Image (tube, rainbow, N blue to C red):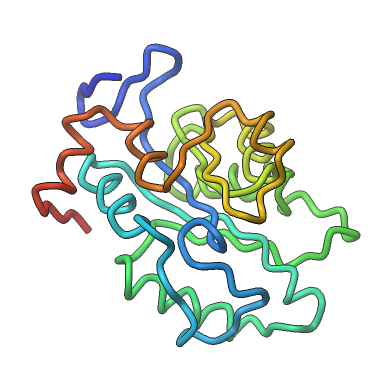
Length: 197
């Protein structure tokens, strides 16, 4: 992968312009149906990973299933409060895409469907083919595939073995996932303390 004209080029695909992150279990420690900003804790290496993406000049966004809304366990204002807290910790993301539906709704947005990924790319003004999705379960990888984006799986104890086996790219940490997408010169920005928000 090389850098040219402010975007990152992969020999196996078009230049990378944006990275989309799953929320729970990827960016932040998973707290089921969390509506409390005080419970937001960055996942291991997440701060460094997001910083590295921004230091490379790429756009960032979040795509997250929040079926707690559809189940009546969360209100939209609670979800927005959690997202404001995440933006305070990480710096603002370029787009937040939220699916409030339960699986039975059959919506276009809930991962593993591609709706949120496509909407995030549109909101960021990038081609889905120039986007990568990083998440912790098979639905994240499937949504990326359906949208025509690249993907990296970062397993947690909740990730199924079959999801790990079927993922095209697997990384042990979020920072490793980002480094797999960025050239070494861009990833080095985090080690020198460079911040680009």
